[in-house]
Amino acid sequence: LLPDGAPPYRAKPVNAAHRGGMGAAPENTMAAFDMSASIPADYIELDVRTSRDGRLVVIHDDTVDRTTDGTGSVKEMTVSELRKLDAGSAFHRRFRGERIPLLEEVLDRYAGKIGLLIEMKEHDPEAASRLAEVLGRYAFALPQQRAVRPELAGDRRAGIIVQSFHLEFLNKFHRLRPDVPLALLVERGRRLRDADLFEYTAYIRYVNLHWKDADIRTIQRLHAFGLLTLPYTVRRYAQMTRLLKAGADGWITDYPARFRSL
Ligand code: G3P
Ligand code: CA
Image 1 (cartoon, rainbow, N blue to C red):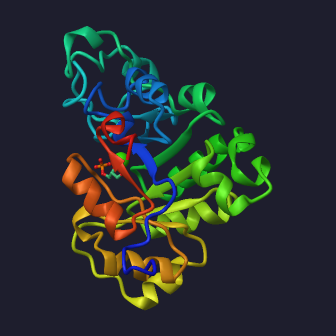
Image 2 (tube, rainbow, N blue to C red):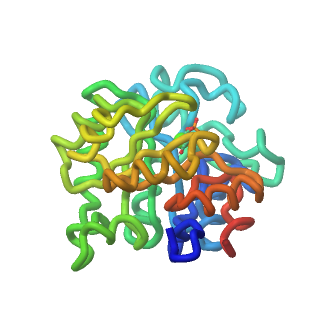
């Protein structure tokens, strides 16, 4: 606490655009990423899955049904089939023609220019190897290559963070690429024991809480273990100010433009 008892506001919370900033553009598309880059947000959060032919594509659901004009399971479609789909019109007709991006396409455009918070939606060992292999080609954007203070460089300066709800996935991925900062997503209401937090400190930097669980006590506990938190998914001003007061290190929001000034 500050001397007057006020909570410890951080100098600059991380403003991360959920699914690229899905409040203003179709989720997980280049249109959304371009929009968030132009604000600029600090990080673009995006979701990754594998196509039938083993390529990493940027899509949230395990089917294309909700976000495109097609139907079917992502893992049963080839990249060429996935790329024919319209991923923009379901949001608004003016985005017609947006495609499901390849992860490499996103990395080609943004790695080293804006932060990328990459959520791997699959958690099998092959998913870890595939992601490690692709990110290995963009090592220039990883903190160790980037700055004098590796413990900070990946956080705020156009770094790459990999996140997952699955601890085993992060563990496996860490063994393949120990140079990539990791975030564990925690489901709403899950109790975090001291023993869990202690275990995380070995290789995890962020414990990303549901925003309702991100109270001052929990955040202080995380900080006491040297862990940071970017709570998800924030949409309202009151939620944001509550997080700021509680000492969150940033947030993941559908509306990165709305909260940039904070
Ligand atoms: O970044 C947190 C958030 O993305 C997790 O939920 O379902 O939007 O991927 P979801
Ligand atoms: Ca996500």
